[in-house]
Image (tube, rainbow, N blue to C red; front, top):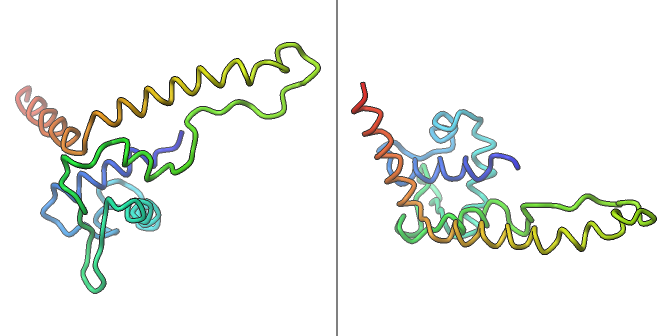
Length: 143
């Protein structure tokens, strides 16, 4: 799996919490990537109705309260119509395992994907932000 989901979470936390303008350039600096990559991800988040930008104004804004944006919505925004687990293509149909492996794995993979989406649905962007602040406080307390 690539890192689009974690990058999307990172940039959404930035948009929600930073006092800096959430421009592609500022987001890229925070994430540690280039502005082009950020624009690809923000485009997906805009298409999903999670982010917005205004013509003539710099930066992005959330379209909803951070408590109302589930991790599932973010995941589905950056991976529209993409299955998490894939069954290899073209197994040998003459092999007793190759002939059956797809139909054996499909229900297991579907169960795993359903469980992931249920877990992601239970957490919001606000939960991630709360964990970030808890982590920051914990790290500060130990110095």
